[in-house]
Structure formats: C-alpha cells, structure tokens
Image 1 (cartoon, rainbow, N blue to C red):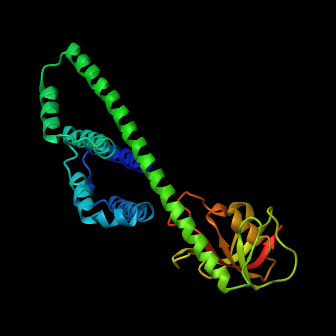
Image 2: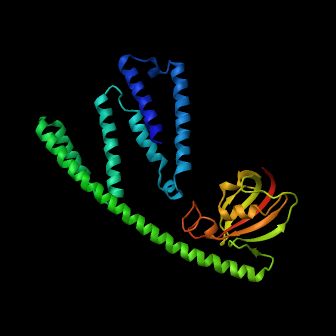
Image 3: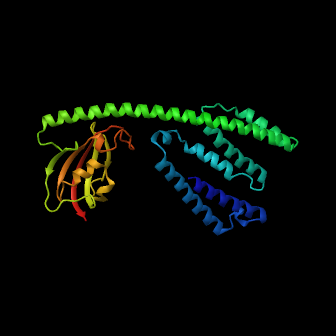
Length: 299
C-alpha cells in the first residue's frame, strides 16, 4: 500500500510539473487522450483502493470506514489549485505529520494538542530563522522522541503480554472444550478411531490404490469446521491440489491414510493443528473437524 501511494504521488508530481510548464487544452475537455486517461485512471485506481479495503480491512474496520468521507478528502486534494504549490506542499507536510500523530496516539496513548502544535509550527515557520535555536529545538525534540520510543515500546510490550496471556487462557479453555467434545463423541460413536499421536478419524469410505506420502501432492475436496459448527475453510465442493508438507500435522497424518476415493472425517486436536496460536478465524487451542475426500494424488 505504501508503494502504491508513493506511485500515485509520483504521478501527481508529474502532473503538477506539466501544469506549471504549459497550459493544457484538457481543462476545457478538448483533449480526447486526456479524457481517456482520466477515465481509465479513475476507474482503475478507484477499484484498486476498494479492493485493498475489502482484502486488508477487518469487518470492524470496514464498518467504521466511511467511503463518502474518504471521497470528500480525496476530492479536496484532487480539486485543489495545482498552481499553488505552497498550498499543496502544506497538505503533503500535514499528511505526513498527522500519520506520526496518529501513531503516537494509538501506540503511545498520548493525547496530542493539535491546535497547540499548529500554533507553534506556524510561529516557528513564519519567524526569524536562527540556526542555533533551530538546532537546539531539534535536539530537544530528539530527546522527547527517544522518551517517546521507550514509552511506545513499553506499551507495546505490555499489550503483547496481555494478548499472550489472553490467548493462553483462551487456548486452555478451548482445548478443554475440544477434549470434552471428543470424549462425548467417541462415547456415542465407536467407529471413531484415535491414532497414537492423538488424531481421531472416522472412515466414511475407504478408497483403493496406493496411499500418498509426505512428499506427494493430493487432490481433495474438504470442509473445515470448529466444534461449535462454525465453518472456517472450504474448497466449496471443488477439488483442490496441495502438498502434504503444506498442511498442519494432523491433516497430513489423516491424508496419509486415505487413498483415492476415500472419505474421512478428521478430528484434529490443537496440538496437531495451530496449538495455542490463533490462525485467522480459528481461535487458539481449537479442535478442527475436517470432512475430506481424496480424489487423486501425484507423487
């Protein structure tokens, strides 16, 4: 995303240079190439920004992100007078500073007085240049930055410890729930077997032919659920290919028992899956249930 924004900035600077160097007929709509470029640039970049939000934002972030507000800010800059380079430079400088301020507020839990910051910036910017004072001010700021870095590192460390403690507590609870779930399930269904490693499985159908090994690629149709029924992954009814070395240990062990045509249900404890770490929508310590059909494999 940073490279993408920088690329846009480079294009914008080229555009401003062109505007400064000569007058353009595109302003009155007579430049058909300019019109084509305007349409293509707008459509492509608008779609890419929407895709970036869709693919990289959490559902909570998407809910909070107001596209109309984004467009209002985007238009404010886009429609600015490109002949007023000082104004555009002010916008650019302000955007860089606000990113730092947001990081201080979010990561350092510091309340920044933006009115005061602007007032002092304006006085210093419009005041008499004194090299010695500027150097002294920069040294004082560097001292504060060093203190800020320590503070932010301390806060981040505390947050990581809190997150780790919560993850461990959640993992322990989920592991216990998984064990209770499997004990109850196996008491009701004697066809469920458990291997020495702790993987439980139920054979729905056993296929024929050779068995895949850890070096093979398998073609499978699968669906993955948590013990509460939440689906976290699926091939959507289509066969997909992946190497056995790419999957969690419990899934690999199950596949190594399945020749083409086999259908199993695999009950994978956290110790053979993602352990005490969350993985996407999978909570820490989760027991995973896979309905798997092997259609083929390549060695």
